[in-house]
Length: 83
Image (tube, rainbow, N blue to C red; front, side, top):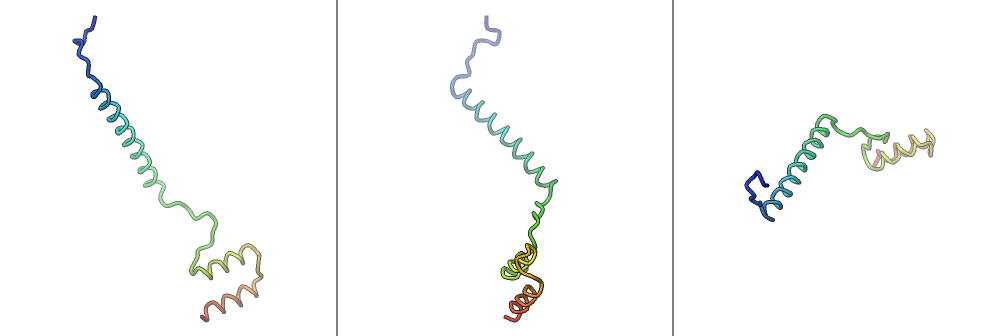
């Protein structure tokens, strides 16, 4: 015995229910992601040196990694800043 009256919502009713459920949970997940980004702030710099200029930044990174010594770093930096 059907207590709800026996009315079937049909194919379109089920389609609308599925679409609305997907949209609802998508909105909930989007809200959580946006809230997490707002609370978390900007992502932190992962150990890279700030790049004032492309060439100076590359030179600073090479010096930090130990590829060049201080004298060579200062000489090259002075050359870059002259131009």
